[in-house]
Each structure stands twice: as structure tokens, then as C-alpha cells.
Image (cartoon, rainbow, N blue to C red; front, top):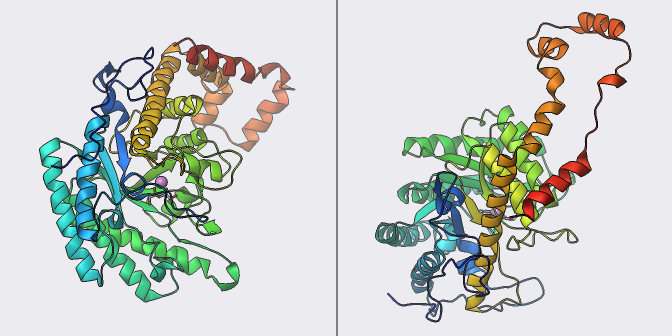
Length: 440
Ligand code: XUL
Ligand code: CO
């Protein structure tokens, strides 16, 4: 097998005192943490689209990084991408990867030909997985870049486009199942609208649900036992994406009876675009029993678009992992780096340096989150704050023993309630977080 990164060896864990840029300072893959090796707790995944395909092209300029992998034909490039990806995963101690069908193998002249070429790459991936033990976290289909999807895929006004979408997703689910993936993602793509002046939103939403039901039926019929995910995002590429945020998606899933098969794939930068914190989205998913997986990245708070930066904000990774711990850890999901090195970070080393930055930020965040959880002050504060629901009138309300008339009687006899209000202590709690974070 050819090596693509000859100058870079396996990235070692050297600890926090190390100044070697090509070493982990916090991510120690085999260190046992909360009963499992760190690599199993964090379940890092490489994103095929950014890492193997993204060359820095943006609206103002062409690519800056060479992602041709030394090949000029699409077939040879697809195979070289596999070799290069497995080399990156091996050297970075990343156990999982995620793909869109067209990241693995592009579109050819017809759907049948595209399918046949995709099969070849999937067979090669299966062989590489067997040789290396690397795994597929989730698969998805790129139903948004080809011009046929200009008005959406399952929400296109064209029924033919709906049919094409179904065919493409059928194949992507087959590839996911063949590679043993435990997740299949629906990210909105162009499922949304630009103007309501040309849009039948009711029909589009019904159709989106129709397609998802078909996906579930087909996936289960070919032995997919994992989770289907929706990845909420409020805008971009369309002005209004139907999968706006977790709460919106929950309403959709429940309305259409999809909530038993779908969970959320929460992306940090998408949360920011929805004017939520990353933690908010994770929390909404957790308390509603639909937390699934994470697209790890970060946005720029001053920009209104999806910058997909590698996550380095440890405060955010800490609060993210705090939610993951409270959700009971990952089951089928994991931490997929839906992140790209900046356009100016164009060298092969930048791939490694950016993953090291993101992985260390999550390892550190996980350690801090565990410490925060074990410290117990935050959890105790929350429990105490709601103590009035454990006994007396609160317990009676929860037990369903009360109604408006009885509550009115209670309120009349109880009188004013100010004496049962306590401070929210936000500043004290924020300082506890700092205390735990910076005494690591
Ligand atoms: C787009 C995005 C996608 C999904 C997979 O914003 O996040 O890459 O993660 O389709
Ligand atoms: Co994403």
C-alpha cells in the first residue's frame, strides 16, 4: 500500500507538558476512563467529505489544498481516498468514519453506473475495515449537490426527483448496512424553501415524512438495526431549512410517527446558527430521549454561516460531554468531526494538526465534564432547586392528585409565595465550572 503521509508517523500521546505539535496532549486512546478506553468513550470519526474531498474551495476562490491523492481518474481517486483515509485514521487512532455516498464515489453517467462504481468502493472499504478493525459510524446520501436537487430532494415539487431521491437513499442505506454502520443520517440538504410564494409547505413536509417512512421500512427489511438520525440545521443552503432545530424536528417526528426510529445528530455549528448553544440542543435531545450522535465542530459567533471549524473551545466541549455523560454515553453514535481546516491551513500536516486540536479539545472536555459531574455541586444544586417537587404539594401535583380547584384552595390558604423562592446562583455555578476546568 502506498503511503500518503510519509513524513508523519503514528501520533503519540505525550501528555500535557509536551510541546510536540504532532503529539496528543490529552487524548490517550487506551487510557481507561470511567471504565472504558478513551477511544471507546469518545468514538471519534473522520468525515470523508471534509478530510478526503474538501480542498478549500469557497465562493471567492478555488481550492488551496491538493485532495487529488495523486490520481487523475475518478475511480483511482476514490480508491486512493480510501487508502489515505485509513492511513489518517490509523495514525490518529480514530476508529470510525462517516460518508456521503458521493464522497466515496462520484456520480457517473447514469444511476446504474454510479451504483456499480459505488459498489466497488464499498467492497474495498469492507476489505480495509476487515484488515484494520476500523468501523463505519454512519452513512448518508448527498441529495443536494446535483442540479436535479435544486428545489429539494424529497421535498422537490417534482415527483420524479422524489423517486430519484428514494433510489439514491436506498443504495446509500445498502452501503451503510454492508459496512456495518449503526447509523444513517438525514441532513436537510435543500429540504426547505427560499420563498413561500412558490412553496406548498404542507405537501413538502408530508413528502419528507413519506420518504423517511420508506427509508425505515427498507432499512429494517435488509437488517439495519441501528439508528436513523436527523441532523437539525436552521438555514443554509436554503433560507429556511425544515429541520430547523431539535425541538422543531421532534414535532415533525412525532406528528408523522417517526419518533421510534429516529434520533438526533447534533452539530455544534448548526446549534449556533439556530441561536442556541450546543448544550441546549444536546439537552433538548437528551430530555426527550432522542440523543443519538454528534457532529463535532464549532462556528464563529460573529459569522452567520456554517464555518465548520475544528472544535477548540474547551468550555463548549466540556458542556457537550457533560450532556453526553448525563445521556449515559454514546451507544450507536459518536463524535464525527464535521470540520475542516481553514482554507489557509492547506498542507497535509494541517490535516493532522487540526484533528489533534479537535481530539485534544474533546479529551480535555470529557475529563473536565467527568470531574464536574463527579464533583456533584452542580447536580446537587439542581436537585435542591427543585426540592419542592419531592414532597407536599409538588409531589401531589406530580402524582396527579391535584386540579385547578384544589390548587386554588391551596394557594388561597398558603398566601404569598416569596418565602419559598431561592437564588438561582448563576454566577456561583459558573465559577464552579471554572474552578473544576482550571484545576485539572
Ligand atoms: C451540512 C452538514 C452535513 C451533514 C451530513 O451542514 O453538516 O455535512 O453532516 O450530510
Ligand atoms: Co454535519
